[in-house]
Image (cartoon, helix red, strand yellow):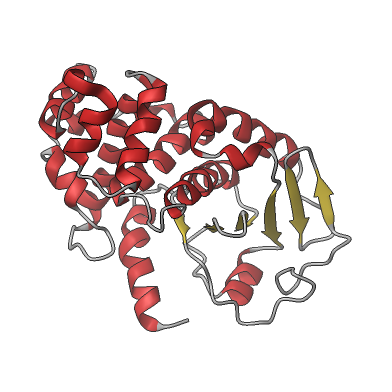
Length: 279
């Protein structure tokens, strides 16, 4: 794997993992060290697969992780409550999930560091991961990337960094991290968070935020995304994303989607901050 690719990967995720946010993974297409055979990554066999209504779960080990079929189907159903308009393909296509036998096999065969617990391949509708105590959170995060990425790719682009990670982190909160209520509820820093314009402009791949502020960037992006999805009309969120993928500014996308209710980023910031709990 090229050194610059690893450097970008580390900048994006090492700080987050240091703060215990193990479910934060990435859209990262790995140059595997071994050739794929029969369309499957090295180490996987065609007969080691569990098929459900919406998934093909390939397991490198002799058996699939206990309960993974229910976890995946449950996450998909919940995520599509928010994102089905962005991923119409999900109604007819199955997602392939490759579960490596363990951390060592995952690192060896994908070339991705172990602390990057999973990655999604939106073009092939695939998720690569290895079994760990945080697998549910990892899958929630990656599935969100899998749903939003192709929507923007249809116009030859990619989601804005804050929206891409905001959706994925929000899904991790909502559907993969519920047991961690203390962490979820401890977001008092948001009331004194940086201006939203800075959050929207920041690019984690080229920015210079320190560990703690990078973690907070993820949190703030997720909180703003949750406000757009859950406090405002759901159909307007789709219009907002569609405008962004067509290349307009964030201000213009907000005007097209929400009209005078949220005419620009400044108005969004005001409404979002007013919605934050006191504690």
